[in-house]
Length: 241
Image 1: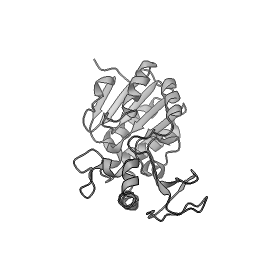
Image 2: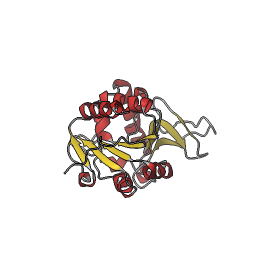
Image 3: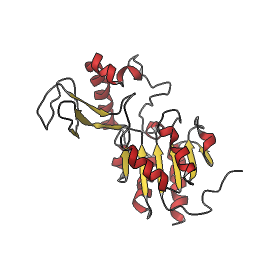
């Protein structure tokens, strides 16, 4: 029997979003059938080894993705989550695996990009991280130390540790509702968040186009487009506040 997640109003919420949320705005997912770029596997352009081997190719990949952001807009799911962020009186953390800026543009503020951000650079000379718009390329110059050619996209690549894990773990231990939206359930450590939340007593909800690999771990699973499911759920939740 499915648990009724509305039977007791939660206080503290952690939400995880994945590529399925931004896909409805027109961004290709990494792992879907369209998740390749000009014949290259994502692993060939999203690892430190790939960057060392062919920085021009890696920069071209991320420059193209960054430019794509100018052509798309947040969708109904992004906007609904921003409204929840704005009006929710308890603790709230939106953790996203997405590197786009659609959550920010929709208005979300209690937000953590665990896999980095397309519109940031990271200097490998001085370690500074900074906002970056437009093309980066091999000759990009660090605004802090002025070194050129040692700037990479501030993206967590395969084999690297996601950002904010201590903060995420603390939030998962305190939350009484964990919600996963538009994720495959295949990429760790994010795929393990539901287990941490369940172990600490939180109720769990998945919203996805189809059940994820870890859907059996959730108290409730709703299937369908995020742009339809998320606004409906947010309306239900805020009505109980």
